[in-house]
Length: 105
Image (cartoon, rainbow, N blue to C red):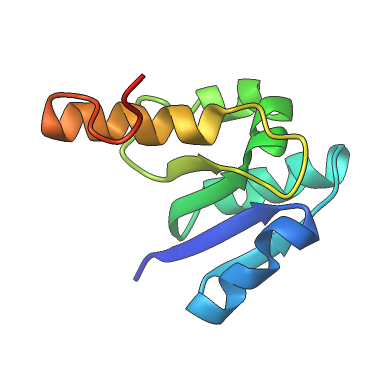
């Protein structure tokens, strides 16, 4: 059975644990890359990743763009957000509904 993980800084991801999601708290750098590689090639179907960490690991994440699993979903973190998570939500809503019903600009 597939699992779900949330990876990012501790303050941004620790709350996912109460939902039964595996929490991987990392800081930037080699530890983040090592942990991401570990969880992205195995039993996880969905990986939530903070926007700031996704920006750092962009080249590694790009390797999974055409694969069905894992689904790698950027989420806003407590700090250093760049809008990737909100842009992905907007794009998914537009694709599903056919127009922007949430973020009417």
